Length: 212
Image (tube, rainbow, N blue to C red; front, side):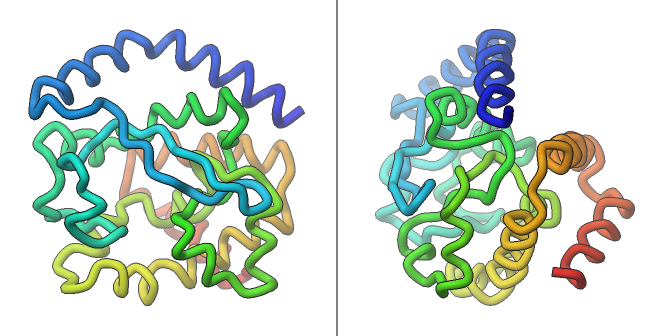
């Protein structure tokens, strides 16, 4: 049922949003002439790596110019990229990953291999499901760039400030996942985009962190 939902919903979303995709593709290309998509390698189901689709929001070869984690004021972010990252528009092409089966709408956010290699035996359970566009951790931490802003070492700040809670919430999702829980996460994700500082969402995620 989950895979059928992913397939039908992603196909419909790609068709409906194709004009938006084309407009942003043109803006990205217009800014510096580089590729439209960023195709970074991520770890997916059962530890298999795949290339993620994201609108490129940073300069070409940004991965060779700095940390894996990105702070809000990172100079590698382009002008159109800053706008896309603010409203999560750069994540929309991941609908293509959902369509071809690398990802699901809901599931633990895919990580770079460097971070998944750090998983303990317990944490490897995260790799038993398809990674997703959104999950409980994505709702809790909807603006990672702001948390990392000002950090001398964004990767270290990510490991110390974000990753521990992120993993707790991802493991909680693994233990309690149901189709209806996925629908709730999708609803709260849209709500978080409309009202990023929603106190209700913060309180909900706070309770989940305590119970994880």
